[in-house]
Amino acid sequence: MRRWLMLVVLMAGFAFSVPGHAQDSQTVISEEVVEQRARDIGRGLRCVMCKNESIEESPSTTAQDMRRIVRERVRSGETDAEIIDYMQSRYGDFILLKPPVQPNTYLLWGLPFLLLLLALLWFWRAARKYSQDQT
Image (cartoon, rainbow, N blue to C red):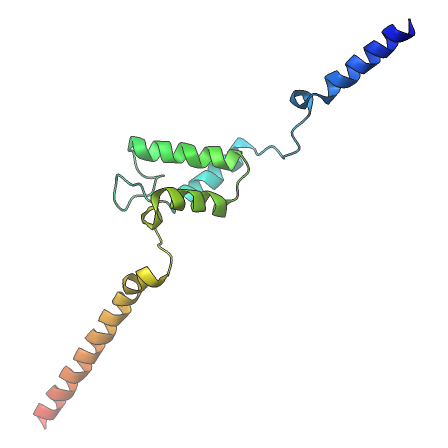
């Protein structure tokens, strides 16, 4: 009788210690939060098929797949930065609608300011020449 009771207690102990029965220690994210975070992240990611459209705006099947990947990663508990890093490692810097400032993008970021400076210099010289011609 004791053996049988010990066997039942042991089996009950093993049944409750099985990982499948253990509750997940991670907090469960509501579906509204998942959607909002996924949309925020998706607005910063470029669709690789539709140039200059975010994956949230693009109707392409590629963008749908990318949105699915983002949502799965949000549900798994990854941070926004981790998800963006994953997408950037998979698709390169092109995927970012706002490319990072780094040595290979200095021209991209600096060219508008350089053109503005050249236009102001040209305008200043033209105005100076015009005022000298008037005297």
